[in-house]
Length: 213
Length: 238
Image (cartoon, rainbow over all chains, first blue to last red; front, side, top):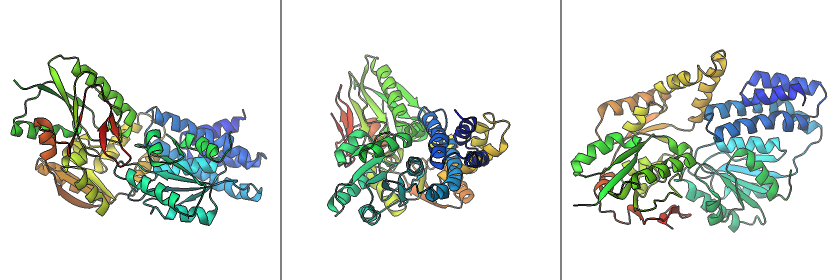
């Protein structure tokens, strides 16, 4: 593997923003395609820190600085992706359910989805149930992704799924995640898929839109 | 002689249980404490609970295990005992228990979604958002990244960002601990949050220790059955 790419993986994983920006620029200058830089340079670094978080080797701040490093690199790459005519094939509406202000997990999922070339419309936190189907309609989205961190706000996830199903948006897929969420709960509330972490959220979204990696 | 009740509790409740146990005249058999904060990793919490339940029920004198827990990020869902019944309060977490039930807890959050709850136990851990958290993080990260003070500063800044959506330190008071309450006020000042004192309600914790366990406030899980949760959040045994 390209040494620069490997260094970029490590810069993202360890949250070294300046280093991640510098290496991204070097890779751009070397003529590498921006989408390849995202997929081979940034995403593996985020996946690696995500794995360590899951195994309890690192805490939330390490995840956050890695996400910041990836975000800075994406600032360089996004205009180049647009210039190259790389348009996301699928759009995801993303948000944390009503009453819940937590956004770390949601933001990580958004970042990983962007890294996999999904269009991401982030509605933020504490989002009213009706806003999800409305945004899906407006943006022609294929997937709605819901996050909840608290058992106190889990019922709002069910209310949101109900609001989506009762709306005029037909055939849209709903994916759910967050610390207290499980596959069992996903099935109970009639969502289409559950993902335990940000990296597998990408695989799930791809599966829901009928694509595989 | 009454049946021997073992207690498996989160150590966030140390102060409240110490105060209520004698007041209520509760007779307990073996007591096991687990460290607070395990709910951050619900699978780990479940694993620890399961291991400790097995150890407690291996004692033939134990006839019931009381769990001083709530759903705790659903770490309690999927837990079971083999030989004895489990008893646990219905509620989201320690805050529901200290406020006397999930309804009071939900009412506070509905009114103030940015409330972050403090109690003597959480304050003892000194990891609550506030002046000492930064020092704790520094002591955690400096040995890990001794040559990179910039990275340590970044990590501390990122941690602050993780609490950016909170705006109120809500102190749940059962033990009338003036020092803990004043520490909570200091945290609020440090963070630029408002501070609010919520009178705790010891009835749930007291009834857990003494019984009886009415179905409205408690789940009694028969031996061999699993703690489960329905979509509306109600706990039941399967």
